[in-house]
Length: 410
Image (cartoon, rainbow, N blue to C red; front, side):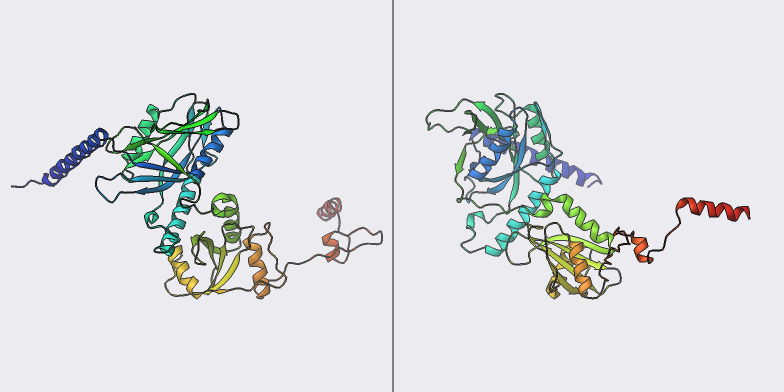
């Protein structure tokens, strides 16, 4: 007879069996020396060299993005491609014996790169612009960081951090790359055929930067050395340029607040508007009670490049709580707004200035009042109040106070 606790018991048994299976697989991977192939882009290596050279005394580091391509056969080794590294934001803590990465900027950049790569794959699948082997998602691979002195292996703290990441089911990662950068090494003379887990790169001060590459799998649960191979630019896909909304976060905040303060409901998103990457960053705006929207489309290098405005009538199904789906509906019905004849875009202007010019041209807004200075007989400009009032003299504060006292006395 089954009991009420039997399903929970079965679940626990299954979890324990899976745990044992994973550990056995991990032991087999260690005994057979199963680690992935590792390919590094020259760009990634150069990106590691720059901060390591500038912060010689402090620890530093960056996130890495690339591909994990599984082999076609069960016995084949996967290949990890490191394409680029991403610097942390200003919240990163760099000291002589500690480094803590910021995360907000890195997360935004990784998301931006992943979305652009996804669209590139969808757009160019089966063409010469996308090799079949690289038709895989772009993913976060791990972090590299610089350690002091000759500490070429991950520390105990690095090990604990890696395991906590791998054990987090929400992250869904089964492996991590944890390369360790050290500087100040004597240059290596000559070449060797030995398969080592590090690369060396000459620095401007005559010494070498060394990068030791370590790999950890959730089933193995210990760091394993992995042999890297560096390939020149052009042999691997290059990442998209960062969007302005990522690198100019303060500008994005100012733009959004300025539109909202003028009484518009605003939603933002990035979207494919012209059929190619990088994606465009877009604004959906509408005034309360209006029956149509104004869409603003900006390129990745905005504000250096001018925005484009579009008019979109209200269509059924628009729900601004879902900006992407709403923009798709509006974009299909949108028509370009012709810039006003006297409008010229410069990088110091903002979308609200653009909107003002459009609304003035459409007769929806009065042009700003221009005050023309008026001069008196001494060629001194009158104040704005005097100019508007025909130059009538206003009593000063003392006269007003005296008049009030006289009225109270009477």
